[in-house]
Length: 113
Length: 109
Image (cartoon, rainbow over all chains, first blue to last red; front, side, top):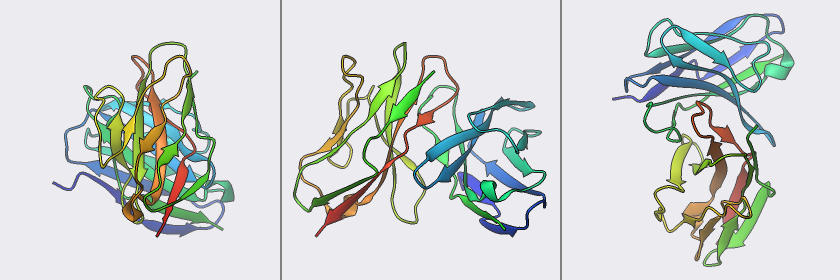
């Protein structure tokens, strides 16, 4: 039981390049989330999903897209990376019954040059 | 709108001293409040929730609706308590968990 797994863990991009972060969970959780963590800004919600095939915008969705084609996977895409997207990205999941108990991945550190 | 404020970016205390990490919130209804902790090189994890009124690792937190606060307290700090602490709020019926900006606790030996 691996919990929440994020890949890749580190990535360096040039401005304008695209990439996808993959989040996989093996706990059969309905809800999944993508947050970004920046110094002095805490955790900010980018997008979230309440079930397979559904996604919704969070606090800072601009410049990102997401997809939830399978219940266990939640993908975060950057179509044209910008230096402002340099951050640590965290994926999380939870059950329907426990609104505050998020299970987090280890994080993915992205640097955009 | 729901908002969480943690006024201190960094809090340094000596080992054995009491600790209080402040958290204030803004929400029009009845929220659920949580504390999360992130130890060095570990995942962010739930520390405690106000509903359960439990003590975890010696930490407690009481929801004060009048002052809209949910401060985290521990009577005697330990070195292993050094970590980043986040207060979080979930509104009734909301899918989203809103985090504060976090407070870095440093316990000085």
